[in-house]
Length: 145
Image 1 (spheres, one colour):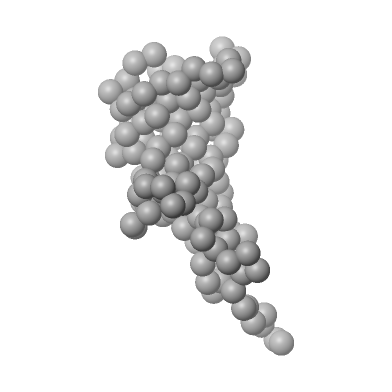
Image 2 (spheres, helix red, strand yellow; image 1 turned 90 degrees about the vertical axis):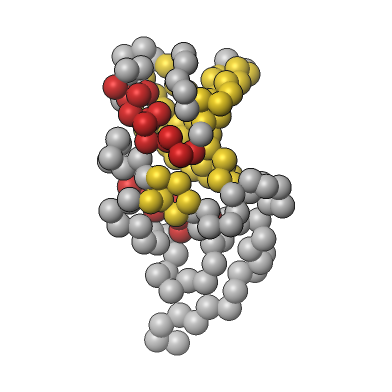
């Protein structure tokens, strides 16, 4: 499998992981869906490698039902203004996954139709799955207290 957006391919434990150019994620995902028949986005998450740089990895898990195959795509994202293009235009199911990553890691998804918090209160300070987030969180005043 070869595509110009793929920078490196890792085969380990019977699994394939493609390290991809984050600026081409939408094109690459469209290719996997249309040409390689990975019609299902089974998951999308992130990893915080703090204090390393680039700090974040956005991880996409794709599933080809027709071929009974799975593949993982990883894109590295820097800590300064962490953002990547949304793949909502390829898989509508990316909607909640991207919102969750935005909410918990603070990674923005450009062109997402409704990028707002999904788990934490809208006025929550910070992103709880970042490694530098305080273990006990920040003080939060709940409404009507």
